[in-house]
Each structure stands twice: as C-alpha cells, then as structure tokens.
Length: 423
Image (cartoon, helix red, strand yellow):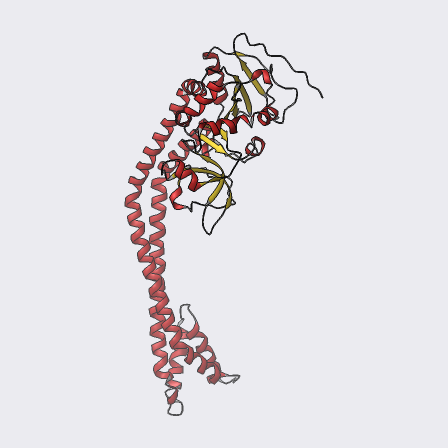
C-alpha cells in the first residue's frame, strides 16, 4: 500500500505501528535514491505507484515523503479526481469542529470515507493509490530525504540506489541494491510471488472465518427470536410490577402514617397493634396468620364511629388487594426473567461451538499473519533477481537504527566494510 508522509524518517518509524493481525503492516519499504544517480529508477518508481499500491495491498507499506507541507484530506480528494476514500493514518491535528479523534495514533481498520469528515482535516500520513503532486516534485522530495535515510539506516553512498525493507515482525532490515534500470515494483512483485503460499493461506483463513460467521448468524437467528420475545415479556412484566408497586405505595402511605401516629408511644394493646399493622402494611414479605389476624383487628378497631372519618376500615382492605396484586406481578417478573435467562443460556450452549471455531480461526490467522515471512520472501526475491547476500558490506559504521541490517548486492558490486569508529 502506498503511503505518503510529511514526517521525517525517524519520526515516522517512531510511530506505534500495530501488528498485522489488527490492520498493521508486515513491513515498510523505502527507496533511497537521488534523481542524479538514478533518474530512470525514480521516474519509473513514481510512474508505477498505482501498481506498487496494488501489489503490496494491506501487507506492506511503501513510503514516500511529502516534507514540504502537511497533508489535507480535501487536497488529497481533489488530487485523486474526486475519490472519497482515503486511508488515514496518524491524525496529528484537527482544524475544525468535527473530525477524527486526534488522540488516536493509527486507524487499524483500513479505509474510511473522507466525505464523512471535513476537508480541512490535517494528517501527517495517508495511504493513497495516486500521487498528489507532479512526478518531478515527488522526485525532488525523495532526493531531499536521501541523506537523512542514509544516516538512519546506515546506508553508504556506494550502496545507492537501494530499496530498504523494514520487516516489522522480524525486527530486521534488508537493503537491496538497485540499478537505474531496475524497478521497485518488480522487486515487490517478486517478493509477493515468493510469499504467495503464505498469502493464500491468509485468504483461506479469511474465507473460513467468513463462512463460519455466516453459519453462526444462521444458527443464531432462531435463538435471537426467542430471546427477543423473552426480553419483551420480561420488560412488560417489570413495567407491570413497577406500576403495581407504585399504586400500592401511593395507597398505603397515608394509612401507614395514621397507624404509626395513632400507635405513637402508647404501650396498651391498641397502640402496639397499630404499630405492628403499620409495619405489616409496609412489608413486601409474606403475611403470617398472626399478621392477617392483626390486620382484621385493626379494621374492626377503626370501624368505630369515633374514628370512622379516617376511613381506614375501607382503605386497609384496598391496600391489601394492591399489595397482593404487586406481589403477583413481581412473581410474574421473576418467572419472565427466568425464561429470559433460560433462553440466553440455551443460546450460549448451542452457539458455543460456532463461536469457539471462529475464535480458533482468528487466533490461527493472527499467528500466521504476525509471524515472520516477509524477510524470507524479500531474500528469495533478491536472489531470484540475481542479487547476492553481502552481510553488512556497504553499511556505515554507525546508524540511528538499532535493528540488524542485511545487504543484497548486485553481481560484481564491490562494497567496502566500514569498521566501527566507536565500540
């Protein structure tokens, strides 16, 4: 996949790259070449940019600089003849009310529609299959980064021009010497040919995962229907219980208050009886026979002409009815919840084998895609193009990068060994 960045090589390679299984790249490719040294190689590199973007797909990122200005989504969309999909990596600044989350370093899930975002969103890196500027401008930009890339990777002048492949999974770098009439696309195509078996295995995993997910959706459908029906019943039951509880609470409030005040601190039988019944009416537990007898005695007590104006003799039976109605609906809610839990447990049990298979396939795919394969493919491609392994010949005695670097040289190319200036 073709990447264009306004970052320096050191800034770019300091970004938190995700592993391939979550959308990252297995490796990154850089062309280190000045226009004066290899004009044909450079011109062909940019002319074949769409081909490079396609042959590397989501597995490898081929990086070119855009150091003179920031990247704006609106400009990229216009340069791409109205394309609305731009793969955005590493949002640095959002210049407006809306846009991508500026705290996210990377978007591992691939293409995102540019049309959903304001065109004034600024990014430091984007993946595109077209060149935003003129070829001559891109050649100039590339030439101006050669010295920085040499210092970072430890590439000497005698090794130029060359392609540098940073194998992220293996944490090693391969420098491949090139001639002016060579093609970076040709090298990458050869590397892909060497990795066809591995890439086919990844596609097989993708197909198997898609099939398994389809089987899971089919198997889940009747369970989803059952759970939806049980969920609706449980929701209706809890609403009914809540409604009955509110009606009961509203009705009992005044009666409980009156009984509590009437009982007060009295120690006689009627005082104790009123306090007990006020507690009974407020209780959500089951009433004992003694509780029922106490309620009936209070009803008779307040049926007396002296306190008939309180109407407790008629209110208490109504409160009891509402209480019983609430308890029945509460029980109905418990039963509805039980049926919902049973439906969910049945679904989990029946679908576990489908989900376990999908998880197993995804784990196997992650192990395969995150494993070491790119370095071997590039080495085989270099050998297939007639190049020869040269160890660290042609590398400078000091470099910024701490990963090991291996050189592949052209036949007959004399590459010196630079001794380390400091231990």
